[in-house]
Length: 151
Image (tube, rainbow, N blue to C red):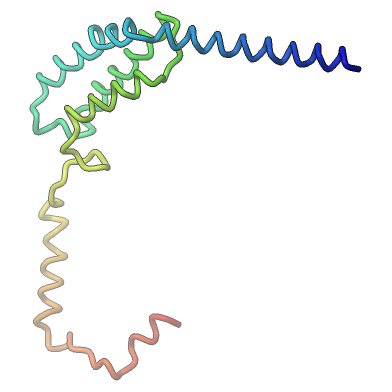
């Protein structure tokens, strides 16, 4: 019984060693060489593409989605070619830097913050003003109208 336990423990230790070694190889393979490659191949093209795009459109998802997709795909293809795990810590840090540089002023939804068109906004303004100045807009708070909202 003791030899079976020892053999099982040895297999488990060997398995752990193989997994740890493979992770080290993946981590080492995706070091500075991978980082340099994605900056040279992927980021360089993205920079040129973003320079061609008017800076006022950087926060417009419709205008940047294709460029951003190409950048993402490029980092994946370089990782695949270099036999690196993807995504990885370097890719995360890379995209954090890209966002800090290009998208730091953008809203969380990725859309430009602006008023809706006048054809949509206008009726709300007119109806609100009409309610404010209409003699019928005064409501008696003692009438109990608000109780109907909670029933």
